[in-house]
Length: 472
Image 1 (cartoon, rainbow, N blue to C red):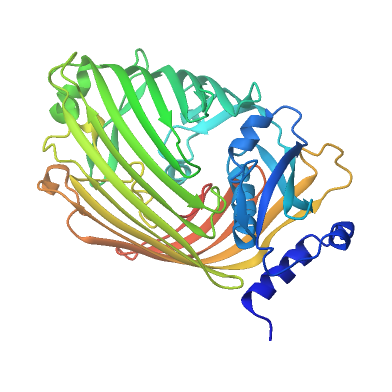
Image 2 (image 1 turned 90 degrees about the vertical axis):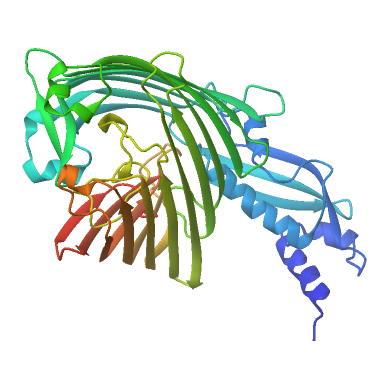
C-alpha cells in the first residue's frame, strides 16, 4: 500500500506529465518533497499590467513550497484573479525543470472593459416595489459609463448622467494601488441628485412620499474620499471621510417634523471605517469559503452642523459549504446597531435598508435601533458551472460563455427592535419575521446573476420576486 508521501509524489508526476523529458533526466526520491518557484510567465494580458496580475498570485519567485501547498496556492491564485472581475478565464500551469525548480505559466483572457450602459430604471427601492404600480412616468433615463481596468491598473472609472424623473450627476474613481508595494489605494466620489419626489416617513412599514412638479423637494450634494489598505490577499481596510450638503422643501418638515433636524438646509461630515475578510471562491456567486465584514460610521463630526450626530455599526458573517457533489449550503449572520437614540428619517437604519434584508419582506421597511438576522439556503446544481466556446463569436472577450443553474430552498429570519413602533404604526417591529421559499438561480459570465424566487412570509403573504444578485 502506498504511503502518504508516495501518493504525493505520484500526484506530482501526474501533474507534470506534459513534460516527460524532465522526469527522464531527474528521478524523484523520498527527499524530493519541496519545490522552488523559479519564474512566473504571464500571457494574454493585452491591457492589464503584469504587476497587477502578479499581485494576486500567492506564489513568488524564490518561494519554497511542498506539493500540497503548491496545488492549493495555484487554486487560490486563480480564484483571486477571477474575483478581481478583470478576466473571463484564468489558467495557471506549473512546469518543472532543473530537478526541483518550477515555472508557473499564467494565461488570462481579458474581459471587455468599457460599458456605456443606457439608464432606463425605476425610481423605487427595488424592482418588486415598482412592479406593484408599473408607473412608467416614474422612470429615469440617461447613461452610466463605466470603464473597468482603467489604464490597465485595475482602476474603475464611472460617470453617471441621468435625467427623467430624477436628475443625477456622479463621478467615481477607484485606484486600488498608489504605492509600489501595492497595498494602499484611494477611492474618490462626488455627485449631486435632484428629486421632485422625496419619501419623508414610514407608515405601516411603507414609504410615504411628497411630490412637487414646479420645484425640487430634495437637493443632495456629496463627496467622499477613501483610503484603502490591503496588506494580504483577503483583507481590506477602508477609511472614508464624507461630506454631505442637503436641501429639502420646508413642506417635508411640516408634514413630518422628525424627517430631519430643525432646519431644511444643513451640511455635515461623516467618518466611516470598514473591514472585510473575503475568502470566497467566486465573489459574484460563491459556493465555498466565507466572508466577514465589520463597519462603524459616525455621521456628524461637530464641525459643520451641530445637530447631526449619529453612530451606527454592523457585523456580517457568511459561510458557504459543499455538502456532497452538487449539493451546497450557505448561511449569513448579521447584526446592526444604532446606539444613538434619535434617528431622523433621512438617516434611518433598519431592515430593508442596505445591508440588512431578508427574503419575503422586500416590499417593506422596518426601522429600528437594533436588528438581528439570519439567511440560509440549501441548493442543488442542476447545471454545474461550466464554460463553452461559442465558435461564431470571434472575440475572446465574449466567446467563452460561462453559466450555471441552481435550485434553492431557503429560510430567512430577522428581528427589529424599536421602543416606539406605534409612532409609525409599524406592525413588523419587535416580533420574529421570517420567509421560506424556493427559487432558481442562473449564473453567467461578466458576474451576471438572475434569481427567481417564490416566498411565503410570517403574515402568510405569498410573493414572486426577481433579483439580480446572489442570495447570500
